[in-house]
Image 1: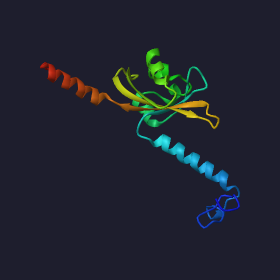
Image 2: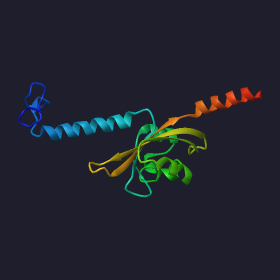
Image 3: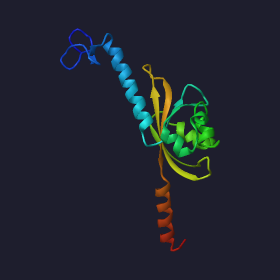
Length: 164
């Protein structure tokens, strides 16, 4: 920002876009950042879901491609449906553990994909708040813990002296 309180480009003048001075540089910057955030969300290689925290059902309002691929669902199956039904398959205890904390948390879960494959996950849950501090959304990313769980089981079998 320059001394007059307006957005400024690198030399202190108006922001340039496609060779033209922007009429509303602050609006342009907000829109550009929004596009950047949406692109990053969609291109992330870990499954991510954004849930509406204003509704008790916590419906999914946005997912990325990795989420759809990992859980084997379509976008139309995911959007508008609660995570409880789609990923947790009605497991109310798992749902309570995800949303019990008021701040960021990590929860280990065991569930199945739509094709029946067993999943060991770590869900990283972050509440998003508006300017007034009210929780508006939940941002959840999922980390596959299947290989780690398999190694843990193998080590336990080796300690016990049993074989597969």
